[in-house]
Length: 114
Image (cartoon, rainbow, N blue to C red; front, side, top):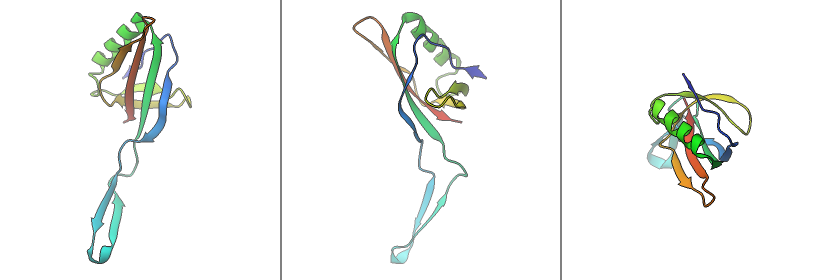
């Protein structure tokens, strides 16, 4: 299993953890009653991550990593920078890159638990 690369700056977890999706199944009955149950036995967390001040080597490392895990296809080991918790996650979509005025880069992405 792949491991997320070490980069020159520390990440910022933009929104911390949040529930990835609502696993609730709702059935409506006459009289206005609603029966609910969980579709799954667990909820999956999602994390929004932002790196700012990356150099070109960091961007190349991230792009190589993204290619190696085929964006969201393969899971990888990742450490939550807020809590230090080690998790197995996958990317929720492609990593977005922006160039700063000082020729550094921003990278933002979301990961979700496997």
